[in-house]
Length: 203
Image (cartoon, rainbow, N blue to C red):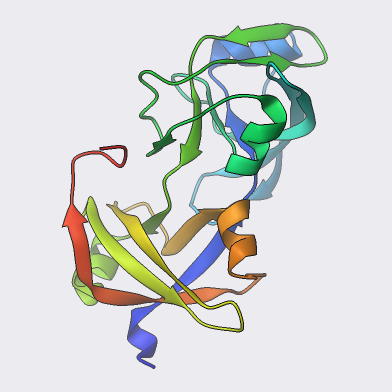
């Protein structure tokens, strides 16, 4: 197997990115998010803060807030989470929240009735321009990634995201990672025959 085509893989649990207004509504005026753990992407971190999310059918407690703050609040959940909450979230790239459902966020100091921003994150690979050149791919290209093991699988429609500040890492949600029985240190191999190039992951 060509080690040059290996891609590290991380499972991303449900989490929420908050804007400044919603941070203050949920945790109090002037509150600053408290970093608890650095994430794979430089400058990104899991926070000490958590919220409860509530949909028409149920609630999920202790949903982790990720920092830093965003311009607009966005909640990323799995399909399994949707069944519990009673929402139907589209598969989108991060930040593409037009025409998405809302949800109720509950914090220790208040509540936010989110009008939109609930998504299933499209599976994607972060990489630098140097990584992209080495792997022979380009920004916003769709590729496939093969994962081995007893529950080996090929992930189709994987969105490539290229930026100098990124670190090489493929992000899946917990449903996808569990389906392939992936754990810490997981990796896959890029299949160098891209499926398509598209402007958005929800077309």
